Length: 482
Image (cartoon, rainbow, N blue to C red):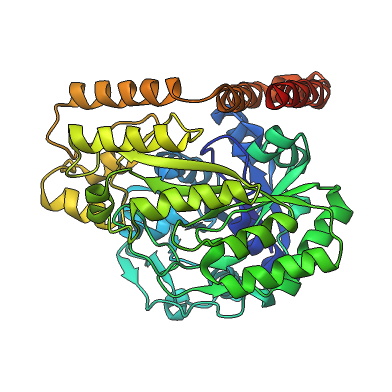
């Protein structure tokens, strides 16, 4: 069968959509012809998308996206059905997992896959190919012949992630992903993201916990094999481990580092961490194995706010994590959430004081946003913060850094926006010249990303980016030396 997988527009293409990549590999291994329409990476207009869809031959369409793609997925599904009314449309990732019934009710999507999609999508394709009923397939919601929405039992988790083939990198516009990651900007090196963990045992109120609290991890050998394969195919020099909780198992991380060191793999890498899961020995080994950057979700510098978020960490742990991470030679990045329930002038002051004394290179705050399938969403629903038109609300969800939709505090809307802007300005003024430069470099990288298509079409995109990266690296050395 001819399978079309679609990556809808979401944000700048700095992370390869690994979910689609894994599904493509699994389906292709079963003998199917798979194509990927990467609208996000190639920034196609709606008119261009319609033209491409008309010219492609496909028997099933699969769309994967985050919750913020909900509105686009609605449009896209209608566009597909207009020309191919009998082609089944399957949606996956958080756009279907977080609100399957809402999506099926308000779009032309026929089947919504819940949580992991590799085995579920394979079963769907097999059933459609042999004209079998999909009623027995676990892990889906679907519309029957009368358009009634049916919920099937959940699917068991994939316990051995190493049985999955590597993502189908060759089906994506890899030059975009290799050169547009934030890490490639800061290092000037070709970079790509890989995944090694699914699940998270913690229960932060703002998190969707897509794969549940039970954690499954890949073995170190398989991860190293994937890095080696990427180096051979794409000459990568750096890796971003795009896991929610890469450091969930210290023993596994140490084993991975030992393998990288023993095999003499020349690779720089970054990942995200949790302030209660780092220690001196772990960080030193990570740095020796090539780790140059670690991002923490600090969320707040107020212990009261951390408790309200159910972060299960302390401000003291956060300060220690910053100190020992820098001591190990690893750059620290962080994120903060602004406007959670209970936010006050005092909690904002505590967060700004935390940023100031730790000299964090961070002057952006994310608005607290209730996303479906989070505890925060349930809280907002119970307190009447979510509009009655849930479909319209979900369609309006966007980037948390800039999109302000729901006020969860006792501040007025105008005051909350003013306080957030003031907090960002204050935090930035506290940055040293070194960190201001790093923020400047990343800002200009984002500017380049927004114009990369026109430059690439002119044949000069990569040349300009390489020159720009070299200039930034030289400036950084001068500033660091000074």
